[in-house]
Amino acid sequence: MTKQTQLCTICPRHCKVNREDVTGFCRETQTLRIAKIIENFQWEEPCFNKGDKGVLAIFFSGCNLGCDYCQNDKISHGGVGTFHTIDQFVHLIEEKQKDASAIDLITPTHFSSALAQAFEKIDKKVPVIWNTSGYETTENIKMVSRFVDVFLTDLKYADDQIGQNFSNCKNYFSSALPAIKLMCRLKKDVYDGEFLCQGVLIRHLVLPGYIRNSLAVLDTIKKHMPKRKISLMSQFTPNGKSKLNRKLTAIEYKTVLAHAEKLGLNNGFWQDFDSSDCGFVPEFE
Ligand code: SF4
Image 1 (spheres, rainbow, N blue to C red):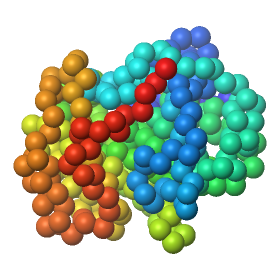
Image 2: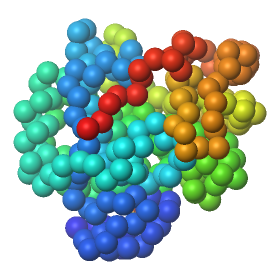
Image 3: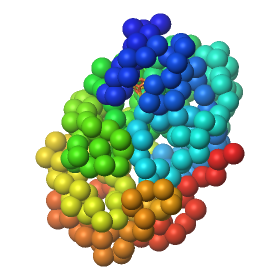
Image 4: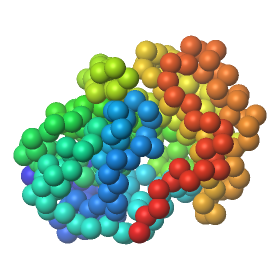
């Protein structure tokens, strides 16, 4: 058991609660809880599919961010999911990984300690993806890099104040930037054909009305990690609870794409603008 789980400072929120007994902002104890598992999930970027195999997507319950526009609200704040002991999780991965291109750990940060214990026991056959909001500490990234192969990370905001406005978080950018820079130092990109088996992919969801934020995110990537692939997403869908209560417009998205092109950050993935109308968000029970 690490000191982090006894008095939790796993993420930059530093709740300092003992998650044996109580929960912090993420609303989860240290026991792994899984909201949904989807086998052969092919909705991540194409570099995570291998032949006809998609990833084994494991959606963890709870979240250490509090984005008011969250598109997976039922799992991040809804308290749904099934508890798994470390051994149950080890068994689950060992049974299901054979049919997957990779193991996709989605919103895993608050379970880092349990996952580190589990992966010490797992005979890993495929890459592990750490699919994170980017709200991470450098200490945690260093720790999980022992078993993680690919960091699939968001960079949501280029300004702490915007993180405060939408994610109930005073230090998103000042935490995410050093964490992502460290991810890049730890994992160089390695491809097997088109398949990313090790490395870093940086995602950014373009928010309606916040185009200047997106341009600043791109400028940040250009300045600090210009060689990494990025993935721009247009799928924002209003959830009825956020101050962001409309979809992205085509002109907003084109403005962001044009800036990426101008910066030479065009060696990545772009969602079609129509993605804001599609069922990109999986259903959760
Ligand atoms: S992982 Fe959860 S309890 Fe721990 S610091 Fe982050 S939000 Fe708080």
